[in-house]
Image (cartoon, rainbow, N blue to C red; front, side, top):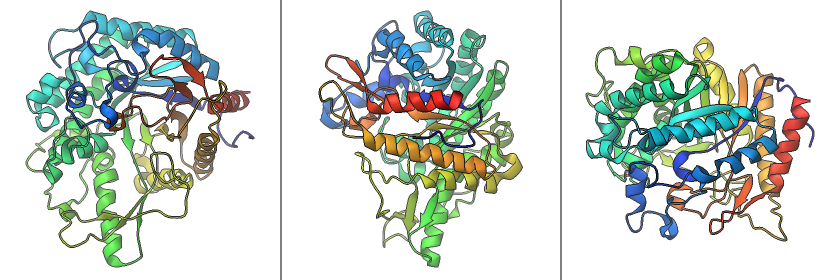
Length: 445
């Protein structure tokens, strides 16, 4: 394929991962239990009964994985730091062996010309904090700020770009709303204080992190379409947009929460918002991380649905092995929407996650994942188009390097550029790995 136009020479090319999905070594070197360790131990929570005790064994094989990144010619690697490795109970003394792992990883990345971009919270809350209420407890935001300060002290001499939280919407809804993810609570709309406390934690951590580098948050965002042009369907789409997108962007960029009256929610989110909180939360970002996988289509709810929207199918498009619709132009639409909606308040953007699950198989030592190549090609071209429309996009991190532990799906979904045999840990670069390598080389030249 030809290199997409209008991507500047300074554009960051990377991959993203998450600690719990790749590291393994869940009981080594003083790491404490996380909510995901507890959740996966419960029968019936994870497809196939899989666990992340080994995952991709990145904890021991990080040098091999960094070599694969170097082979791609990456200029950035977005990974997450496991809070339970740093503070096993989520507070108090620091675990030096846990910090030492990230010391080694950061040094290996820099030795290969790859800028480390750590995410401080990618859903693996220390179980001890969940026992005290988790993100429903305001104190967790304070503990997160303490953890951020400890990590910045240890790594801030080498890290120049930090991400506080990953996809707070997903963690709130699936972890506390429906219970499909850890910690497995099914509170429905009573989960809304989780949004505020996560954002408060972000705001409290931001000033300390900014002493060493840029501060971002990575939000899962989606363009929301009404199923029809009827007023009822448009109202449903607006309600979902408020919950999924604006709940986690308006407070940071505009200093206020969106109208959530469609959910019966007050401006103080059930009494969780206190005087001064929004000033803390709206501490300016240096950049915004945007994770995009697909658009959402919403219709008016059926009688007794309990929510002011109902998901409607997106027909006539390809679908991933996860059965997610493939709509590359939705990424362009989303980026332009953010620029239009927030204007001068919108900082530069990095696309911090984008990728697809494909039913990959190794045949004669090769993995020909043409569907993934088409997916990546389409979405990178969509970014180029958005830049052409005036959106300041500065980098792209595809999800992900290696096939990993895909949360409640266990090892049944493969998102990686590199195939992993989870029995032997043998890594086999796929056709998409070579494609991405050649794209990056062409762009950089």
